[in-house]
Amino acid sequence: MKQVVQEYYGKTLQHSGDLQTNACCTDGDLPSYLKQALSNIHDEVAARYYGCGLVSPQLLEGMRILDLGSGSGRDCYLLAQLVGEQGFVLGVDMTDEQLAVANRHIEWHRERFCYARSNVAFRKGHIEQLDQLGLTENSFDIIVSNCVINLSPDKEAVLREAWRLLKPGGELYFSDVYSDRRVPAALIEDPVLYGECLSGALYWNDFQNLAKKAGFLDPRLVEDRPITIDNDEIQERIGHIRFFSATYRLFKLEGLESHCEDYGQAVVYRGGIPHSEQRFELDKHHLIEKGKMFPVCGNTYRMLKESRFAEYFEFHGDRETHYGIYDDCGTSLPFDSGLAAPGDGGCC
Image (cartoon, rainbow, N blue to C red; front, side):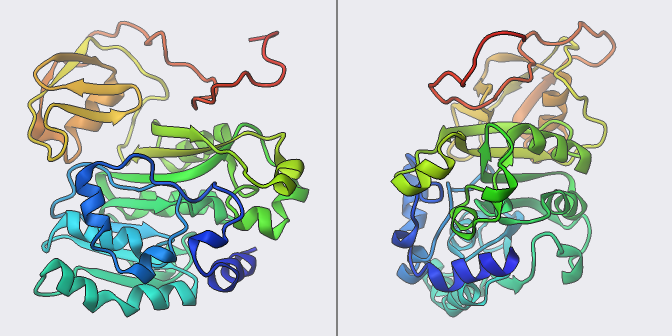
């Protein structure tokens, strides 16, 4: 399957218009500062972009970032502007043709960004075999990936390697495609469906379990959207499965709890995070307004206090008293589909 993916992204696809579905081709509504950063990307790099979102977490100045499946380098060059000249972005990809595009424009982007030296590099490698690249453990503040992990035949290894390479308190922040059920083996083996980021998609609950097994005990959903398959032939074959493009953030914190436990803790956002001055969005369920006391579970408290976000918050409470579990800490499909699932009702 690796050879299939290399062929599909290296030779079959020559620009984003060659994709047969819209699973890997949206940036949504971008804020103006990201639109400006995208305008600084070389045309060839942008044309060879096949992602399913734009991976850009908050507070990146000076960060050391690893991009898994960096392709033509679009996200790397965008992030290079946000980490600044003192930060660093390393892209890893297995496709020679994509790496050639990315490497061809390193100097062009350095001049465009007005940097004394480039803060971007690219390496050839497989994202489930990062241990073969000689990368130092606990050396990256943030790991990102954009619609690539679904293409890996060993997703557990990808998550395990991400945990190993992240600094304590660092995060894996990535967009990918998920399904509402497990995809049958016969569809997984189809090269077009796999290359289009559909049949390699993880069933969302399998993803949750793999993430926890790797050490990321409380995956946080940032945003999601249903994927429509604007291709009648592909729809006929795989349309009984619902697919979603979703962004998750997974913090490397030892000892997080499996559910949202209430210790009577709260935080106050002081402001100051660039482009999030009035409110800070940790995830889909935690939009924290500046200056307002915001009750949080024990895990959320730690995600803020033991990460790069700590200095921007006031922290209230401790873990001396436990008040039980938050009522909305459930296990149902986390994505917004706007549709009832087939067979809704009955048990549970």
